[in-house]
Length: 189
Image (cartoon, one colour):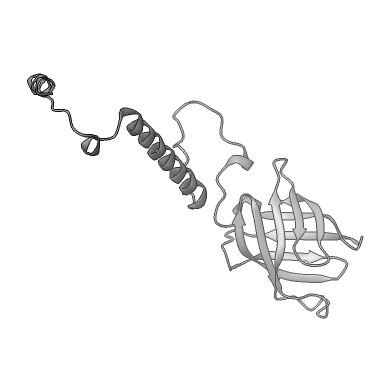
């Protein structure tokens, strides 16, 4: 036994009993694999749970590309994209068809009077106030109905949506009952 101990000491390493030995190479590989899997799982969970920051757009290049179409331009905070006079037919969920006329004046900023709307069949004639502008969708509230309006039916409130389409027309929808939909065309800038 002394020879074995002398040989180990001569080699520069001392044999240790099992209770003093460290983890084997295979054990360290297994631990490393488990830690990597845990980190991957935590990162994946955080990506899906935490809110994402909005992506910033790259600055425009100095190339000679044509200007962007109206539907791909950044949406202003106001409703300047739909400034002008619009008219068209709409139909509500009861099947009633009616004329809608919308006039938006510049500047049109949130919570400020922006123009007027008229709905033929009620009738309602009131001022529109921008509630929000988002992705070429402009929501207005109607208020300050004039004397020609049916005050029993015409109620102030939001829910009038106008979405600018790529073809230059505007889709009209309401979010209150009876829900209405229609298409308006620009009749004057």
